[in-house]
Length: 96
Image (tube, rainbow, N blue to C red; front, side):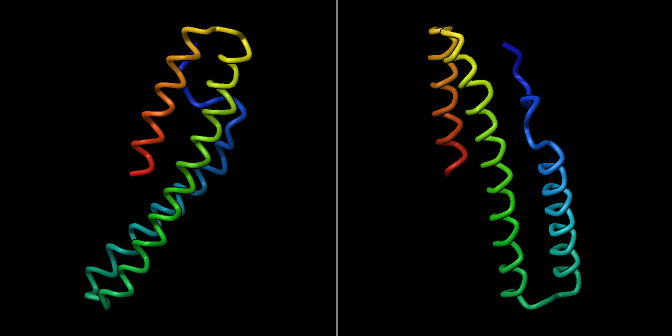
């Protein structure tokens, strides 16, 4: 099985979100350079965390609906078990 982002993957939406996050990070950098109030900077960092988690959730959902689901549907037991183990490890890393 090919390991890459699934075809029906909201790619454009993901890229738009990542571009927005990139802009937010640059905004924080400017805030630090301008010595803005710490609380304002922390609020923006929180917004970025939330945004990046949303991107991760979209990609995780696509992975489950694509790779994992297809492997199970095709009855590839060994591959399915490996993908489920990989999925659990990924979820554990992602939710830390």
